[in-house]
Length: 348
Image 1 (cartoon, rainbow, N blue to C red):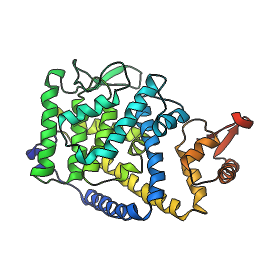
Image 2: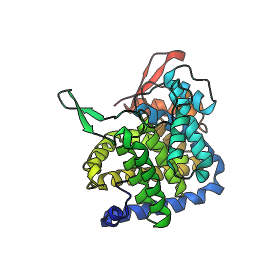
Image 3: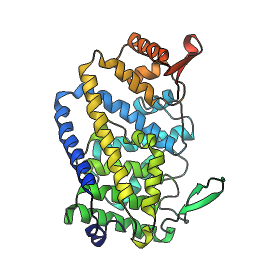
Image 4: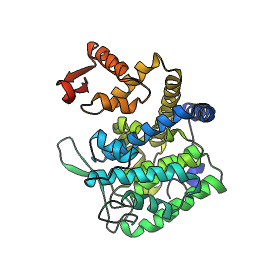
């Protein structure tokens, strides 16, 4: 599609800072491989946490919410979903599992992208995996509250061909032309979002596609650190970068650098967090207090001791309680209620 044609790719130029960022990502990737055989139990714990966070954050970005305990049950224990929101989360869980287990066997075709959408919708009444039948628009509210069209994606009638072109352009750039994967992957995601091929679920599929593309290029950090959570925590920058890089996309005259910088920033932050958390889990002892504080920082809304325990399986309840009291004394959290109904919440 527009970002993956040879002529467009040939015209891209990168600053010294961007090249340094790519080098740093490459260094992090090399370090991660060293942990795989040395610390399997540590990585197992991190993977379980990342699965819950990914299903929660990617859906929450789209306004799909459920209590943390229900999400943990659906993702870890495969609890039966009770309502539409939980059905959406269960579908996302299944796609994550598919990518984690089978990314090496999933060639980048339009049908594979349709499969991701179909699996994500498997618990919903309406079937997934079908391209949109009517034109859609990306809208936003202006400062006065009035809805306005920010971007008009590819028309429905042109979507099947656009997706075939995207898939073939992606394969050509990666394999035939051997372009840098860390340039091609974010450009492919940008084109997917500009095509907006489904009636619903495009944002979630784009994040799943991001994970799949990174896996295919040997970047495994999304298995242990939730990329979706990192995106949610920076979603204002996410939407701004997407808006800037989608301007004049239909004419092939768009500027991809805001989106590339954002994409690389997410990956760099995930790798840095991976390295830090592996070290803390491996050291134990005094680092357990930091694990509790990091878990608290990821909480949205009131939370119980059990929620922190689920995030820090290697940390005892007395340690969690002690650290929460310390954070309360520092003015970082407050405790509402007493007994079993007591809930903590962050002070923002």
